[in-house]
Length: 565
Image (cartoon, rainbow, N blue to C red; front, side, top):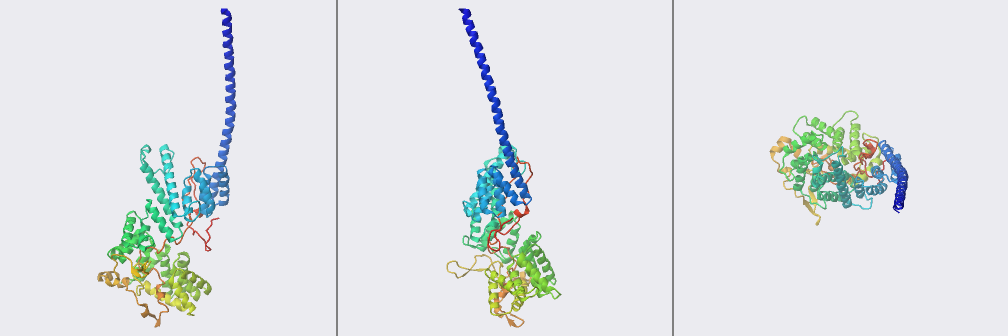
């Protein structure tokens, strides 16, 4: 009986061993075939991932070579395969080339892949009326979202040790605090704001955008805020004290344009006691940095000084300003070539300077003069209709042009008008006559928004040239402080002026702050920051083609959005 039980137990043990062996074989078989199965899936996934990554890489390369159609095709194919970086590059290509509807669709898809640079694309699109959310408030929101998300991603990379370049944190990454990330986000946000400013199409939206951005903590807006306070608008009352305060803050931060702002304030006495010497020093400092506004101002001051060599010195300053793209300087050189040069070809030289001022540097005064030369055939082939048609366009924004059209319609010859315009321009530039005091960008006198009656801007210390100390006029020359002329008493060669506004053709009639009269008047195509090439890609850094980063008008001559093909 005992032996029988032993045999039974032995048989059970053997059966258990056989069962374990069978289970082991089944498990090994299962693992083997699973490995083959999952290996095949992994190989398929890796092959597909490599294929779509290669498509995106080819798109980036094609974009670098300015083959935008091929790049777009590669990106679209990669995006259709869910390559996470394709939509980001596609959005940037589309917005930079002017295909804004397609850019909005690609950017919306890119943010789903956590590609945060697409938020800047969406913000720019919101400013020009594309995307799900539009307007200045939407743009600010997009920029905020993008900035904080990018900052958080960068912080994670720094802590992980994977951010090789552009590491903005000094110190042990493990000691990084939320305040450090917020500071980085603020820098990114401010950069987005400044890149978006040229995109805005009108003054009201520009002002609203700047005020919102300033409220959100965007940095380096002091110069623009100072300009807005100086000119005044529907949201901000004109206030020179606030303007000077902001300009001083901008200069303290190293903004070179603030030098001319404060120079103009000192020269004319806006919220500061009038101090031409301090103004001259500030202009000289800015001119040393090739600031064209300062170079032009020094040219005017030299031209009107007591020096016997004033004209030569002035022409050198004007030439430098013109070489730096300043239209009023080119116009001044054209005026002198027309009125003071008797050499052969001087009229042609005048026409050339005025053409540059009008067509390349967008100076209204040069444009009016060049149109008159076209209509009269002086220094250039006569083309009355071309000059008249352009004068009609200028008249929409520039009152002297409309007065000239009225004179032409009274059958007064264009040549006669041109002659008086040029002689008066020469006299204004030399300071022998003056049609206004103060900064030439705008009049001291404005209309009360309620009563529409004339009122003076609240410029605390502004003093008329009639009250200036004699020491100023002795040092700089009396022509630098000419009183306003009664043009009803002015004649040219014994003839009355055809119209007093002919003296106003020269806009930059005095040393200025460099402030322009409006904001958002020359919108440019969006130029957001290009995406960075992912570290997993097998190509180096992406170098954007010039066509996608250079400044271009937002709209063409027909009012349609500019496209880069």
